[in-house]
Image (tube, rainbow, N blue to C red; front, side, top):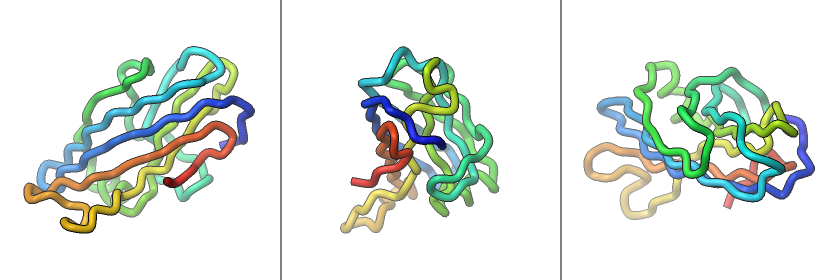
Length: 133
C-alpha cells in the first residue's frame, strides 16, 4: 500500500470461531480525507504487501459490522497474520488506512475463550499502512 498523507485512523475488533470458521468484525475509523468508498479484508499478504479482496464489507460507513464464514485457506491465512483491513476513499483509491490483523494478547486464556473463539485486532493509520499498539 502506498503511503498516504491523510490523518485518518481506525481500529478493528474481530472474533474468530475455530469450530464454525465464522469471523465476526467491527471496524471503526475517523479523520479520513473524505467519505469511505469501500472497505475490505484482504489476504493473504505479509505486512506491507498487497493482496486481493477476501471479504468485501456490505457498507463502508463507520462502524462497519458483519461476519463471514472463512474457507480453510482463509482461516489458515488469518491465523498466520496474513490478512488486513483496508478502507478506501476517492482520494486514496488503493486504500487510505490499513491494519494487519493480529492476535490479541490475552494472558489468562492464550487468546482463546472457553468456546474456542480467537480474539483479533487491527489498528490502522494513514501513511503507515500498519501500526501495532
